[in-house]
Image (cartoon, rainbow, N blue to C red; front, side, top):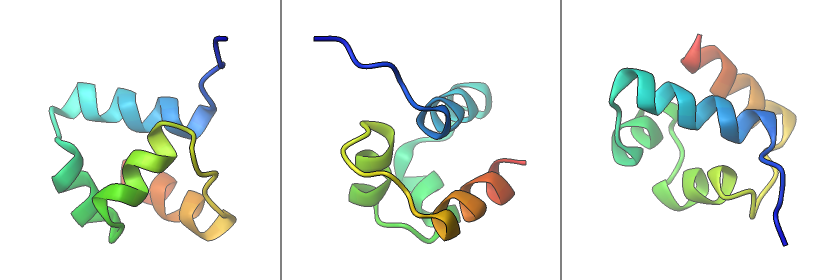
Length: 60
């Protein structure tokens, strides 16, 4: 079964590819744990609105 990637996960992955940033550095910049970042990217966890705002602000 194939899942469609949500927008925030896709934005994170594209940002990491474009800027060559590993998960550990991005998690540090976001003040998230690496596990939280992995869960958001794999869509195991949906970020709350505060987390979405932090991600969008950091990726801008």
